[in-house]
Length: 148
Image (cartoon, rainbow, N blue to C red):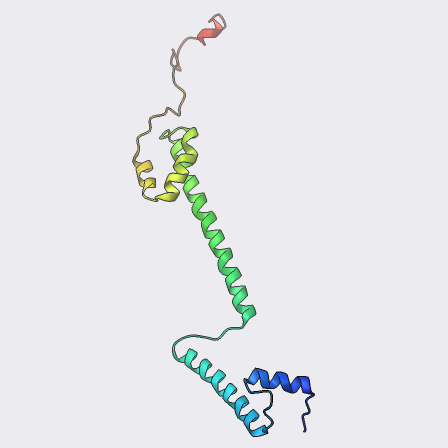
């Protein structure tokens, strides 16, 4: 089978092979193609010998996208964990709700601050206080409203 190239195709082939535009010797052209194939195979063999693997560009882009998605999910999970720690501390009366954002930023910057918050005493009452009578007190319809 004979291949024929027009002048533009021939110029492009010689350019890709790194040969001068006036190269007309077929043996030189075939040698350049052979060297190129050997060099590409050598790169693949060298990569395989060092534990590297050649990968298609589309596969690489898919892997990079999946890795970015994984990083996003991990960051969201870490943020939710920090917010859960702070919310639990608020429910336990260890800090006021107004300081939530402060503690979220603090624990995000330094994870050891979660231990500090966990060891903090409860200083804010979270249960109802201030009754003037116990559960067994005698309260009836005649007891004034403000006393009930």
